[in-house]
Image 1 (tube, rainbow, N blue to C red):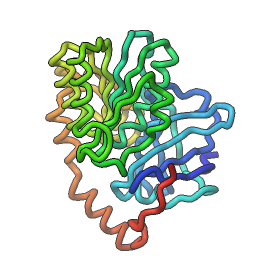
Image 2 (spheres, rainbow, N blue to C red):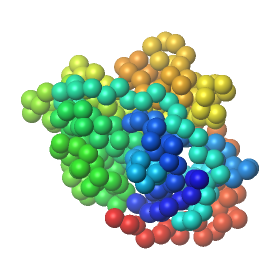
Image 3 (tube, rainbow, N blue to C red):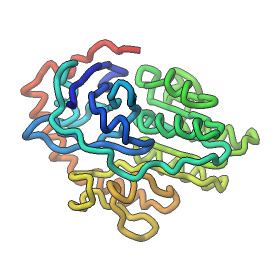
Length: 286
């Protein structure tokens, strides 16, 4: 169990694993995640299930190497096993035929928005995919998002591909063209989700975001993932990860996300000192 069947490099520092987990592959639903631990001394980190193949018995995990734990995870090769893969966790996305759903994915957020877009399309929605990255080389999953949506739009911060701007730039342009959108789903860095919510509010569009707060156990026991939603404390792991974007206190969320930056940086630097080759990026697989 938990064997890495395939391993791909999607972009600089972004890897994709197909992991053998038959029960998870059968049980998981769009919007859910797993908690993984690489080894006995590793920390527990949440990763969204980007896709699943029940027949093959595999789930797809896509992650960006940012801190020590994701760097360590990225050292694993095909045939290696991840010690713990626990899930599916979190509340599944509410899927129904809303009409037209705009699914926005920013950076690594394209991975978690993919299964939602796919499920929304299967439910009969016209799904507008809007995905973005800082530059073309960092854009991931374009072909799969094209297949999972009714139409796909791309933006890059530097204008190297698609629309020059952000995913919100594309969303605003579509609305101003007269496109009727019944629901916005936005997943990505906290500033991107906050901006998407503000853009949706300008046009009175319902907006759902998937939060990526600090998490430890994933079962609601530790309280590390608490966020303020609608003025009340909620736990992302059991009450989410998806919430009404209008109700999320993004200012507080940003502060909590930055609480351990110094410790995270120390751990990352120590790991790289002992694994000096880990930043020699591998060839991207399309």
